[in-house]
Image 1 (spheres, helix red, strand yellow):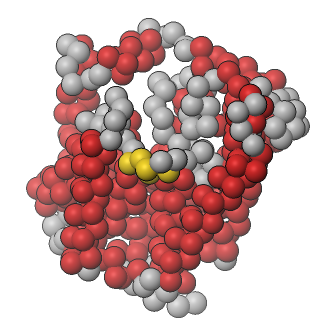
Image 2 (spheres, rainbow, N blue to C red):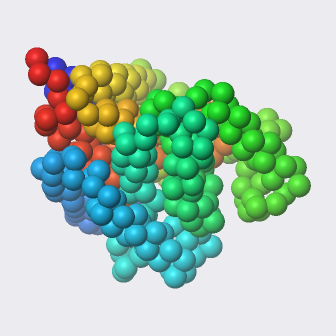
Length: 358
């Protein structure tokens, strides 16, 4: 039943996400610089492309991804894509752009890191050792994390690092080893903040404002907009926050949901994320024959939970503004594509030979 619940919860989230993004896409139309047809085509094309990749990934036997040659190919492509972002103009080199089409490789890297660590951990017999269970696999994914950090996209780099630690701990790395490593990074982060090295100017400004307890105008507007929706909301496309808050389509999309679909909309989507995460974990428990499949499903669940917690934390002022998307909801074809590919792999695992006989 868990696999059916996974699809159900994703469908609910996608419906709410599509309604919210349809509203956001109408900004240009409202301002008189766009056409409703273009907005509809943009949403439809992203959903169709993501659906095609979902079908493709769910059709490929999941054990193929564990093959060393395939992993090397994935890794090489990921590094090439991340490096290629530096050849495109902009202060932040996060996207590959062609005309009106843009792609963010770091979103796919999140799924690749889950595959890499699940594959490594399923083969490693010394996960309780500090070197084999923690340092070695982290060195394997660190070039990907480093390239993302210098784009700069520090929030995504930190998220992938946390995701990696969760997967390795689940696979058998010692808790004390994980705490020791996290402590070392916290100390490093403190000195980077205190002495203002490595961090970019805008990153320091955000952190300084956050630690001084000063909420940005974006956060205050987002919270007020979510409250103004009341229980039932103002209605789809009737909200105003999308017109005044920058990057509302990623960081503050939950405020759009609250303003237009009300508290009910927020509750439904948060409960759907909770149900989705629970169903993924229960599905992983049943994949007893294959540790790679189990770890991939758990890693995918961790990724969703981390991004939801960070996005909600930003929307409520608990965390500084990060740019981390709300899975399946925030505008961005790259994010949707990555999560749908990951979902396809999960579906192949739970319907495939990794599933326990019932």
